[in-house]
Image (tube, rainbow, N blue to C red; front, side):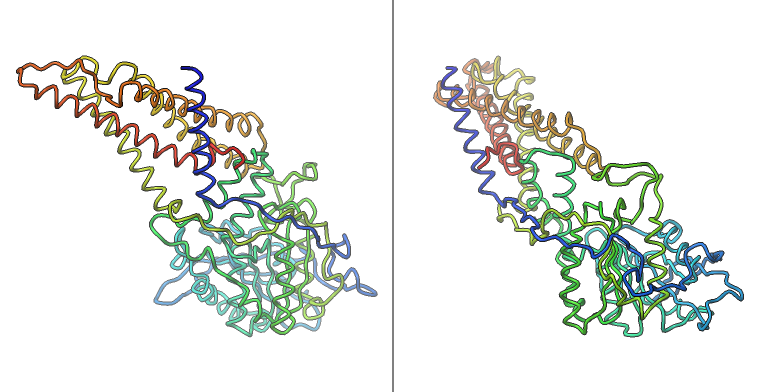
Amino acid sequence: MLFRTAVTSAAILLGLAAAGALAGPGWNPVPVTEHIRPASADTTIGAGEAGGLDGFSEPGRYEVRETAVTIDLDDGASVDGLLREPVTGAGREPGRESAPGVVFVHGAGTGKASEAFTEAATALASAGIVTLVPDKYLAHYSTRHRDYGGMAGDYQHSVEFLREVPGVDPDRVGLYAESEGCWVAPVMMAQDPRLAFQIWVSAPVVPPRQQAAFAMDSYLRNTGVPQGVFRAIPRAVGMRLPGGGFEYADFDVRPWLGRQTDPLLMAYGATDPSMPMEQGVRQVLADTATGGGAPVTVRFYDGANHGINVSDEPLGDDIVPHGDDLHLHAGYARDAAAWVQGLPETATAAPRIAGAPPRQLYLAAPVPEPHWYADGVVVLGIVIGSAALLLGGGAALLANRLAGRTRHGLAPGMAVPLGVMAGTAVATAVGLVAYLLAVARLALDYEQNALVVQGGWVVVRVLGIAAVVAAAVLLLRCRAVGWRVASGGVSDTDGSGGGRRRGARVVTVGFWAVAAGTVALGLVLAHWGVYQLGV
């Protein structure tokens, strides 16, 4: 019996491993073999020019006046905003009658002016640049639906507002976009030739789906998860989700890059694991050249994170700054202010690429889609169907027993392996969800915990194997009784035989419902890698 159980268990495991592998797709990112080499570690704008470039106001030179404003949009809508102006008095830079202006374009999230870009907008204003941070208007923005072209139109009202502010040169107004906002800014630049420049902070450049898969891969590698967990990346990011939407995941900014002609400053935190920074820079340098050769300046800031923030505490080379005790990289604030004030000369000032060496390990690439039977709608349907079968079958068996129609219900030796099989399969599914949530929390907090990451995966897989062993025992016992799963010990109070037949049918239906629900759940677990054997 022990030998047959082991052989049967192995056969089931191999079948589940094959089913999971065939569901596809796999995950094999291509390593970056040729890295960008900054011309200098000094990020100062114009540090490579003969004699240097100076005469720019640095952050902190002026006091900043902050004013709450309201920006009118289309159809009677409006958003609040914060206007920050340098209090210059007679100290305005010689030869310039008015100051440059910057409109801030939010990254992912809801984006309140009172909470976003506070340090960056204040630093630029204190250097003599008028800044406007609007609230993000959400008419074209939700989790499922995002219209980057529509968002560009919304932000354009902030541009027009800033151009009308006294003391702002309307022909020296540009954009400051962060992360997701860097898919919006190129659309704005192409639609409004009067815009003078743009600053991109942590620009993904590649389509959102590719960036999401890249970020997941980087976060998981930093967390130290087992190799098998990576299979979840294309299956989660590539599949079509129930309810539709998410078309923006395949938004391609390259057609808009080809229409850029104005100066662009790209800034990255060198320790940011979420952005394919080297790949993004190469793509921008290649694509903007086709549209008239927009001058591009690139800076990588050592020890800085996604928001170009750093910690005062000494951190290791691979530690990403996170938490509340962070502040904007002082060199970045200086460089951004000098670059804006010095345009157009600073647009081509050497070195064009400077700072810390970037650390992109793998290329972001198109994410393969799962087969139709591993589509999100199908997988969700299987999970719901499995739950219905397990609950319905279990309820039928319990109700039959409580009704007193049978003494035993199931044939001898069936109840325990059936219960163990169903229970451990459900426990495996719950454990898998809990494990992935725990790993996600660690990854987003840039933490490592071998007990959770390695030990948790072992626990999930052991539970899954226990369910398979129970299934093997149940299968062998079904064969031993000729697949007659209902017990013969049935009471029949009226002597007609009807109670016996009804009890047998209820037990049989309940048994196979639980078994079918467990098999369906096992296939879902196989899809997410619980039973993979390196196949």
